[in-house]
Amino acid sequence: MSKALKGIIKIECKIRVLTGLHIGGSKENVEIGGIDNIVIKVPVLKLDEAIERDVPYIPGSSIKGKMRALLEWVEKPEGSMQVIALENKGEPCNCGRCRVCKLFGAHKNAKTEEPVRLRVEDFYPTEKTIDMWKKFLDGDFVEVKVENTIDRIKGTALHPRHQERVIPFSEFTGFIKIRVHEGDRKELFDTIIRGIQLLEDDYLGGSGSRGYGKVKFIKEKILWTDYRKQPFEEKTVDENEIANIYGA
Amino acid sequence: MYNYRLKTLTPIHIGNGNKLSNNFDYFIKGTQINVISFDRYISNLSEDEISKLESYIETLEKGNSIFDLIRKPKYEEIKYSVILNTQTPNPKVREIAEHIKTVLNEKGEYGAYIPGSTVKGFIRLAIFYKILKENADLVNCDEDIKRTEDRILSVELQKQTLKLMTYFKVADSEPISTKNLEVRNVIITNNKISEFAEVIKKDTEIKISIEDKEFQEKLGKLGLKSKYLETIKNWKEACYEFSKSIIEYEKEFFKKKGLVKLQNFYKDLEDKNSPKAPLLRIGKYKGKISQTLVLLYEANKEKYGCLFEDKKGKNNKNINPLTKTRRITEDSLPLGWVKLEELN
Image (cartoon, rainbow over all chains, first blue to last red):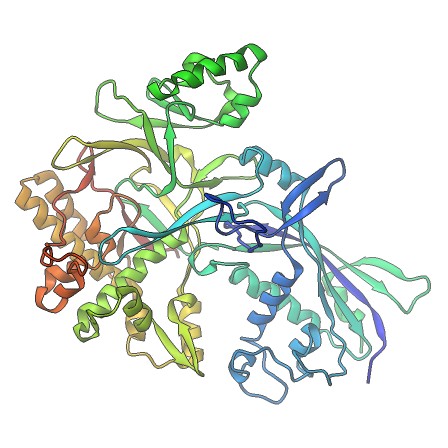
């Protein structure tokens, strides 16, 4: 049974990169002497007064996917004593009733009637960040880190590879949106905040266990659009007001 | 964010793969090495100066500096400056191995750092060394050593292979000002071959994040059954023991060579190593014994010798894998020693 949509909470965020960030992209051509592992880039980014090409960004899917994976280590499926990650043998939850399913969707479960609450937008760099990149990276937008593996017997370097990374102090902006339906409880919002904390304690992108991808979320403001009012009304709200939005 | 501190006991060099060239990467003024943004320099050249570039390109191979032939860089074209710390009079610094750097602050200044992969690499090796040392039966001479390592440091869980060290997270260190860098002449103990390298100075403190609490929690949650979990959980103990073995070996090595200053250095270092705040050896110039399992050969040739045989060579089956030379600074300091301390 579908539930009426009351409105949308939009969390306007900045993601600040604390250690080199690598979210992998794909290459069209293999170049001799080229970079082995490039970061994902948007072909064209329009800023207030300029257009930039091949600009690194953070896909919403990377944020949403990682947040879900981390929450599944602490959240339990409906009626289970065990956390999702262990209960489902590595597969995402598909019970359709737990907080993770309500927010992120019931994985491969076509029968669920719960609407997906969470939308995570792609996050794009601020103009200040692009200026910093140009200054620090001599016109490039990423740093290149050379890595290798040390042979445990000979001590020689093996498998040299070049990794593109977004540098620390880079900031990306975007929205995390939570749809609020009739009957929803504030615990759904709290779960997202918990997911953000888990992500800050973990890492975003690749190679996080050896240094990459520490990030910090900075909540700029929270907006609430009430769809029950005509015309729709969008207003800035305090985090303390979220409980009133969900209501009794 | 940071929960540990690395204190450098000797200079540290972690290369970024680049060698700075005196042709166009830096110019030296007194003892100061000014590293230049070549892009900024070129984009600021006048038409006359650009025409001089042609003659520069013709003389490039002679090692001439672009800054002598065209013009000296302006202040805004300097990326950062470091002091040349050498005892060699009038040294010819043609090339410098560059230390890894990133951005220091929002102003876009340059900062040096220690990659998480470097620290994790030493910890992983120390754990592997301790497990092999205590369990010689794990040595399989017909198996590639990387495969042995992967086998030991992983467990089967719900029909999946779980790599234990994936849950052990070491973030890149905080970036530190380039004021903490200097250029040192790194020499080989038994001859005059030397090379210049940017190093983090001795007695520098750098914060780093090692998430071992979460690592231990997750291991508990998974209920994993691995014989070596305790060794992995007690990773600081493993680092302490591995460093202890390196220090003991190096002390004897320098004693035999009659290099008293280095022998005494290692005597002092013994006291600084402890299971709670172990010493690590990281970066370039740390030598083969600090980045391989070769000390196992020294400990027991019978048990571990086959790991070090040259399997492809027909006549060189029993070459001693222990090296005879060491890289040190001009004032007789070995490179790469840091102390790891937990922050309160």
